Image (tube, rainbow, N blue to C red; front, side, top):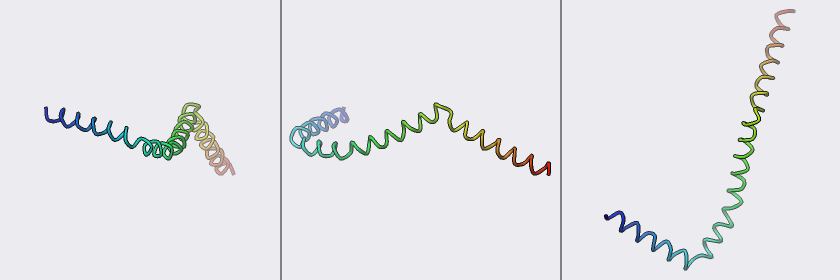
Length: 76
């Protein structure tokens, strides 16, 4: 019961602060938005690379190069 009362008080204070100081909230949002966009862009790029299998192809080509190099050394 006590947590419900404190929760309702916190909600009321939050709504009061939001209505009285909404310009500060807009300023913070405008400042944080580019950071979220950059972070979201990195996540999207990494997810796209993972879904295309590009990393697996790069690893396979590196393994093939080292295998070819090792076979050339043993043949000579």
